[in-house]
Image (tube, rainbow, N blue to C red):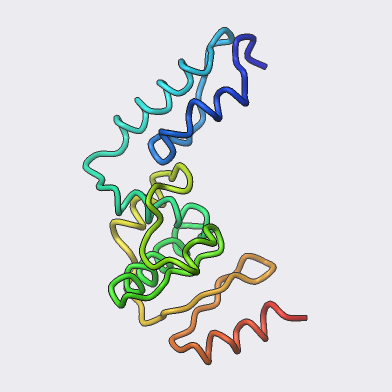
Length: 158
């Protein structure tokens, strides 16, 4: 309901800053335009996020979308970092390119919050390589591909 704000133009102008626009609750002046809002989100990111490299930011963006709470993001973070270390494809549903291309996406897929950034920086060490989220948002982890397939059969197929 901002009188000078054009949502499609905002999306077009903000796209180059994907990953660097901090998601938060803001008090935005009624007469704010797209450039003002982009500047506000970019400045908030700079003030709240210190010393982050592109790889960690890209991982945090994936965790923002893959996990649904602090615990799941920290667990998934460890799984995905180890997949990268092993040369495995990430195979995350939030970015289908990760099924055919190894490594992280070239740019962040979304704008992560602090919880996801911290999870990317400090994963919860575990022995799993696979995970799924069931229809209730509960995560199920597996150490082997066979266990993973059993989880899929048990929790996703009806």
